[in-house]
Structures are given as C-alpha cells and as structure tokens.
Length: 225
Ligand code: HEM
Image (cartoon, rainbow, N blue to C red):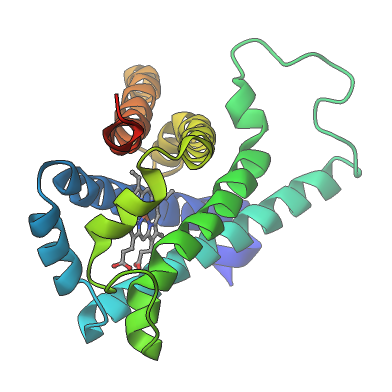
C-alpha cells in the first residue's frame, strides 16, 4: 500500500498523526488549565469525559493515533538505518550546520515521551476512565480529577521534577516535529519554511511551558510556600 511502501506515504502518515497528537495536547492543556482556577469546573469536564461511550471512542481514536505514530516512527528509522548500510547516519561527521540536535534524535526523544506517558497514564487514566470502566476505585472518586492532580503534584518534588523532564523531552520533539510535519504536508515555500520553524519553536515553548507552569503551581500550592 502506498501509505506504507513509499517514503512520501510514510512521512505523510507520520505528519497527519503527529498533527492530530498536537491538537490533542492543546485540548488537554486547555482542560488542565481549568483545574488551576476551579476544581469543581475541572471535575465537571472530567465527568463529561468519563466512561461515556463518546469519550471512550475518542480515547480509542487517540490511542490509535499514538500507535500509528510510534509504529511508523520505528519503521521509518529501520528503513533509513538499512539504507545507510546499518551505520549511524552521521557516524563520521559532526552534526551538519543548520541541522538541529532534536531532528537527529527524534526517535530517542519520542521513546522518552512515550515512557513518561505510560507513567502518566498509570497516575491518572488508570484511576479515572479505566477505573470507571472496570468498576475499581483508587484513592478518590474516578470523576475527581482535581483531587488526583493535587495528590500527585502537591508538595511532591520528585514527581514534579519527573514531569518537568518529560516536558523537556516533549519540547525538543515538538520543536522539530511541528515544522517537519508542515514541510511534508507541502505547506512550505521559501519564506514559510523559516516561519514554520519559528512557529514550531514558539508553539512547542507555549505548550510545554504552560504544562510546566500548571505542574509547578500545583506543586507550590502544597509545598507550604
Ligand atoms: C499538567 C500536566 C498534566 C496533567 C495535570 C494531566 C492530567 C491528566 C488527567 C487527569 C488525565 C485523566 C483523564 C481521564 O481519564 O478522564 C489525563 C489523561 C491523559 N493524559 Fe494527561 N495531564 C498532563 C499532561 C499531559 C501531557 C504532557 C501529555 C502528553 C504528552 C498527556 C497525555 C495524556 C493522555 C494521552 C491521557 C489519556 C487521555 C484519554 O483518556 O483519552 N498528559 N491527563
């Protein structure tokens, strides 16, 4: 199939799934920002997105996006590696001028993001949507997302640090990923390539910076400062 066999098709799947994941991130960020201002408003949203059929369907769609993005990343890296005779691409030279560190390490950065994501899902999703689906119960009611956020971040230095490292890897991944997706989708003529690179930098910084700020706010609230 073209989307699997041709390099353009594979990059297209990576780009479209990547853009979908970034849109999820923006939605997730907006939802989490509500928790900073009002626990009850946040929990009302959580109740809407609990184990309702439409929320479960959206979660399955999101999981499919993640799986496609990860499998294609592995496959593309494998094809590139084989095309280079099994050698590292830049084994004999320093990083070429104008090539960012992130662009050369997308697979490693993606793996770090996914690893932390699994920890994150075990913190929240397992005790919320999954708990509701299987009828189990954690420390709080599954719809009380605000209580879980407090529970994990309030005054917990190590967890907060772990999440900040996660956002750092995500930031690196996005600074290259966003403009690279736009390039693949053909949205770059001469001027726009540099613009998309700047937009990627600003977008990644706003998204990851805001996640970091929310996490730090919850940490500080419980640190007794
Ligand atoms: C301030 C930081 C964050 C907070 C407080 C937070 C909070 C939460 C909560 C409460 C849930 C459970 C929602 C539910 O099951 O109803 C959740 C799920 C999830 N989070 Fe986060 N999150 C944060 C950052 C992130 C980041 C940076 C990512 C991605 C890189 C992410 C990816 C996910 C995913 C994929 C789910 C599962 C969504 C689903 O059920 O469809 N989260 N998060």
